[in-house]
Length: 435
Image (cartoon, rainbow, N blue to C red):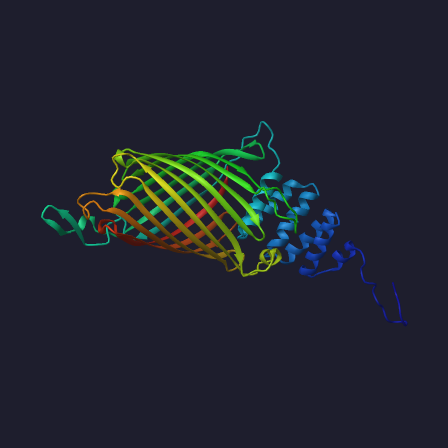
């Protein structure tokens, strides 16, 4: 429409959402227009806006999430799942949002025809590392023993002192086709972890854990929706076969349940676990461990969901407290014991594909009976374990990630035989796959 004096052309400002979306070239303005279209019940128009946003700014994670929501509401679930796959593969999400995305991913997947082969999902990791105490040798070079003539110091043989070595690691995780069970899904899971040392081969390990996993995610919620009080459930049942030096060390069975509930921008969790181990080499080491835990994970250095998802550098701080009671066989040295473990973890997002992680864990373990007449005249053993870990994660592509981790471990005890310390560095590649 033309106004004013001849020769001066004044364009009328777009008034409808459609016209505003078509006219705008600003990704932030387009994003707000897309949210308005979504709130107005126009998912096709919102989808158009969000597609333009991610085209102009591919690093805007929040736009990818809302594009998936608009696409699903427009009826194209297959495309919505593709958007979620891209979101999960390219961005590091806060815990509560990650749980929500995982739920939508499971909810929107198109059921396969009865004749089609079920899909398996998993990841494989390979890496190299260095361990300063590959044989878990004691930290002290002399150990006091309680003899009839009195306490005497004995030198620790060099064969038992800490020995450094290089190693390779292989990890494999596989999740099978799941079936609906109540509000969630249940399916088979296989975990495999292997560590092979270059020289200290008697300390090679193989950890094989087949099991079942049940997941009941939280109910979906749209942008700005209220938290769902029911939260999500995860229940695991695993068998375990652990080998050391090429021989079976123990077999085990573990069942556990974990409940997570969104709380404001955080996620609260609580759970319980029972684990039983049967040792082949030394039957007296068999025991059953009962434990409960509670944790909280929160984003920091960000003010709201939009700033998190738009790629503003921020972090996630989580803390977990675990208490356990280990019921031992009648003939195990030290008898039953009690454990209290506290873990704090911080992850700092550097950008859409990089993050730094720092973990501190401390545990207190106390036996209930004397460990041995030869050690401080049958004193009750008390241990304190600390682990400090630093790591970096780099997303390489939709399928590949790289990790670099450095760990320092120290164990102090009132019985010097159990003093230990060491450091470890691992560099590994991880690849996700569908089969």
